[in-house]
Image (cartoon, rainbow, N blue to C red; front, side, top):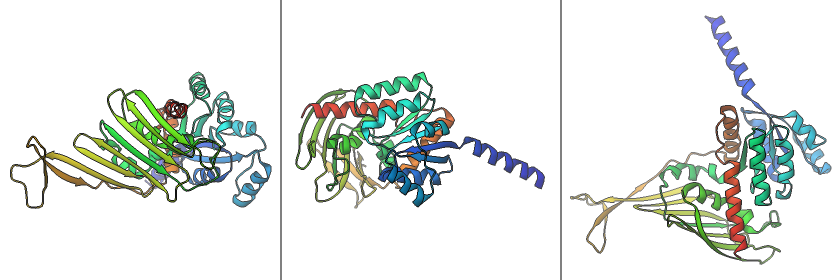
Amino acid sequence: RNKCIKIVTFVYIKINFLMMLKAGVLGAGHLGKIHLKLLNQSEKYELVGFFDPIEENANKVSEEFGYKKFNSLQELIDAVDVIDIVTPTLSHFDCAKEAIEKGKHIFIEKPITKTIEEAEQLIELSKKYNVKGQVGHVERFNPAFTAVKDSIQNPMFIETHRLAEFNPRGTDVPVVLDLMIHDIDIILSVVKSKVKSINSSGVSILSETPDIANARIEFENGCVANLTASRISLKNMRKSRFFQRDAYIAVDFFEKATEVVKMQDAPKNPGDFDMILQNAEGIKKQIYFENPTVEANNAILDELETFADAINNNTTPIVSLQQGTEALRVAYQIIDNF
């Protein structure tokens, strides 16, 4: 019996090991170091190493954390199954193209590329070389959103506020590509309709590109989304509110909290503590509250590991290259309307 248990355990360990994907990180800046740490911790990846073109930074990260430093992007690509691209947006396309053409899967930070044309080309290349790609829209994995996303059904009005204190990092692109694109992706994931029209405005305060932006997106099914983003606020805020028939759902991405208020037909004999509303036509509705469980998680680790699952199970990544491209397309429509 003990021999049988040992054989089963050995087989399980061997299968589990075989399913681990060799991963390499391209870019070892602030976010790159986080990805390196999490891939190193993950049971679904084997972290092979990283490449950073800034030699001083590469040497520092290698010495401090012990990760293997590669001398070129080509060497890193040849050594792995998955390339995790955590570089400035301008370099996304060239790095991803080189990895895909060598048959490597790519995880690529948001926004997917600098231009829509580049993003569309990556989609075609991924099909040609039969590789998978996922875009790092990390808010899809925020526990507050995942706790209520199944309750968001046919929203007809959406309001989002994404405000951040000033940080020079990221100011090389408009606030729409830096911050608002998170909310664009969330909205596109829950509104099952095509965009009909967009109106927007943006103002530059400290940067060469807009630091504050507001957009109104109208969808063909009648849903309207009002988005506000700022990177020169005095406090941080990341809130979205979804209004649908008989329900109001609020998501606080920053505090990782939710609020769900629903309505149903009022009972004939309501209790003393039931909240009842009556409209002008005399129809009575009962208001009640739901408290979905928000389970703590590491959203970046989750997005990386679900990508491993998509590769191993041959399924579509949660945030596909196509979805990342659509978020970028809407973002540029907003910018073009400034």
